[in-house]
Structures are given as C-alpha cells and as structure tokens.
Image (cartoon, rainbow, N blue to C red):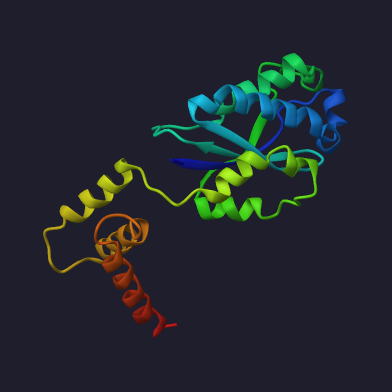
Length: 205
C-alpha cells in the first residue's frame, strides 16, 4: 500500500570547481546505481525511489513511502547520497561533503500526479528499463487512503452539530466523499452523490 508520495528535485549544495562543471546527464549510470542500491536496502523498509528526470544541473526523484509515517523529509534518502559519496567518489564535486545535495523542491504529491510524471518516460531508454519494476508498481497501484486519513475525515464530519452546513463544512464532506468513493459498503451511493453534485456544479460553469 502506498501511504504517501513525494516529488524531489536535487542539485549540488556547495559545488567544488569540479562540481561546477558536472553535467548530471553524463553521470546517469552513477545515479541509477545509487538508486538501485537504495531500493535493495529499503524495499523491506517500505521505501522506493524512482529517478524521473535528469538535467544538466539537477535531477528529479519520486519517493514512495509504503508505511504510515508522521513526518517525511529528504533525510529519507540519505543513503542514496552516501552511496554516491563513498562508492562513486562524488565527494569531489562538493565543498561540503557531509551534505552533497540540497532540495530545490520537496513536495507531497497525489498518486495521480505521480502517475502523470512517469508517463513522460520513454520506454526505450535505459532510465526506464532499469526501473521498470518500480515504474510498473506505481502504475498498478490503486488510490488508497490510510485508516488514519479516513478516521480524520469521519471525525471532521461527525463533529458537525449544526444542520446548516458552512461552506468549509460542505467542502470537507465533499472531499471526504471523493477520497473514499471506492471504499466501504456504501461506495456506490458515494459515487452517485458525487455525480449529482458535479451535475449541479456544471450548471454554474
């Protein structure tokens, strides 16, 4: 089960003279090797990385978290950086070897957004072939909520004592319906309600 996904963009934090000249596109093999080692190490810990894009001075990753965790940060991928430093001698590219990269972007994304990102892959490239297992895993993953998320949404709704809903309360209920439309014994009724609400909203477009 996928609990959360993150889009990460990394660049060298304090590049040395060699680091200023680096082109990440020319170092794809090192990045993929570090990625493979990370996934081997953490697969049983329910974390996966997919390298989604490589540019001259930065590269993008999708981090898949398969455990319910309160906090997630770039620390989750420290061993990825450590492998590049220790095994591939990337420490020569930085003046601060204790922290090779800095995050240009670290944001939580939806499953739909993650799937949209991987649609940009060219299936004929090495980048795709060496990550096919994890790409297929993400493609085949269904949208699922944690029990905690569902409980929080139900709690929000059950705490509403006023039958005259505020705008915020109405939005919270609609969001709950959308998030849980495929869950529970009443999922068909939820979907019907969503369609009815959408029909009403369409009249105002």
